Image (cartoon, rainbow, N blue to C red):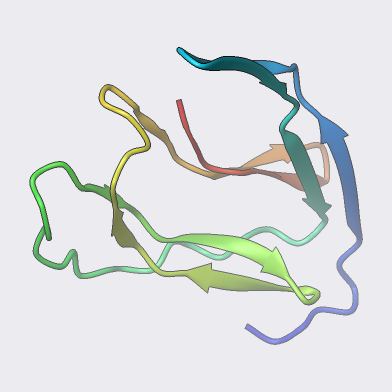
Length: 110
């Protein structure tokens, strides 16, 4: 998709709530960084994808999605990914309309 010079973009970086990571040897606190992208141009419809054969039984399919880079929407192709830990669930990225703008929420493991 070509660049759209008419789209207004607001990008902010904020810190989410601290996360405590426990390990038998030590405990550490990390503060994840969250980037927020808001644009005035609606995202395109999702592309159709062919899901390739699952490489391993623990791998999870992460569906493709539109992201905003270099002043335009770019398609991020779907892929298989190994969850960071047993029981982790993928929360898919999404675009949410807010008035006349669209806000992007990054995907993450929960």
